[in-house]
Length: 101
Image 1: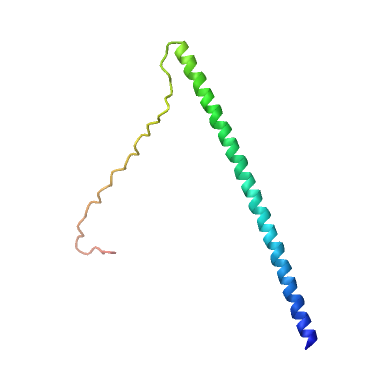
Image 2: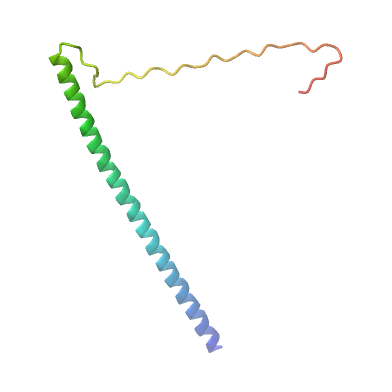
């Protein structure tokens, strides 16, 4: 009986070790994903700053040449066109035709 209890304890210990290892693995993956997201966020911020600088340069060049600025800060989105629903023409069934409905 004692041997069976020792085997069960060993099995329980092994399961706990596996659980801890799995948890640590997932924590490492989560940290890696968070680091990647933070790096992407910094890249996006840098790109936005670069875009703003380029827009200011373009506007300055346009003003220096007497042309209107090509961009303004407010974007007007074009409304999406709603496709008109096609009306299905009712065709009367003639004699001897099969109605599959």
